[in-house]
Length: 77
Image (cartoon, one colour):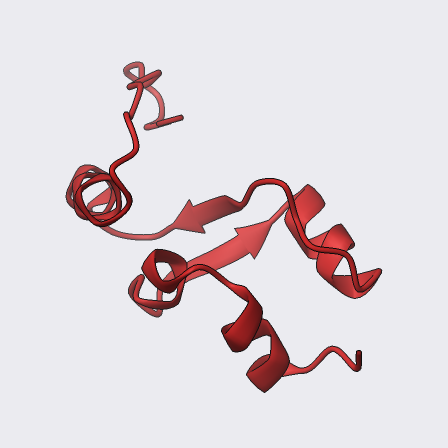
């Protein structure tokens, strides 16, 4: 499989494809895609209102979200 934007769009779960444009895939999922492997999970970095995006993503996927944020940064798992 040749990796390009169109192929990646087809591989990603629907909920990830619908995230705002100010989101980027990071971490091991990028490595896996470059190695033409199916990622086990996806790490996403976001610019904007993270809590809104996380809640929307959780609603679309049925996933439970854990808030690990503190006064310096927002982090959800």
